[in-house]
Amino acid sequence: MSNRRFRPDAVRGARGQRGAALPWVFFGFVAVAAFFFSTEHRAHLMGALPFILLLLCPLLHVFHGGHGGHGRQRHGSAEPGSAEPTTKDRP
Image (cartoon, rainbow, N blue to C red; front, side, top):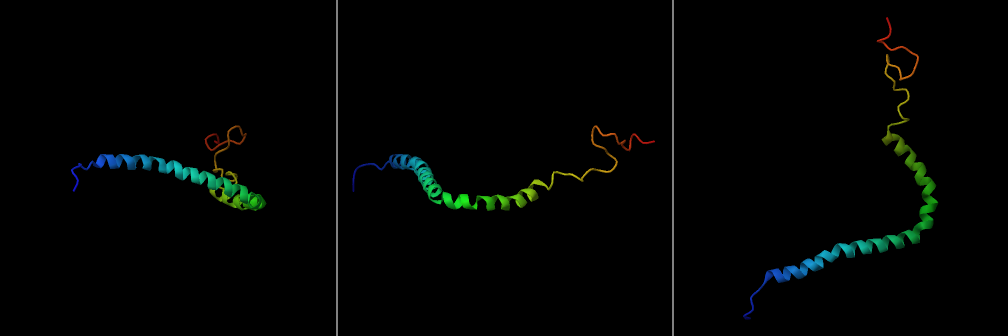
């Protein structure tokens, strides 16, 4: 056996430095992969773009709430600036 004392903080320090670089390496790899993916598949994506936009129209229509609310006016209330009297103005 050795007479050296085991220092766990020295081992933890070396692992901490290596662990701090892992996110940078990962995001660098993702950036390079995204670049090559986009350059190699650009023709496929541009060819499908009109179809993707057409498929997004119904989704936007559903999630946005329809046609913007026309026809949803409550009875007895008029829009501001209209000449139609409201229920309060009627005798």
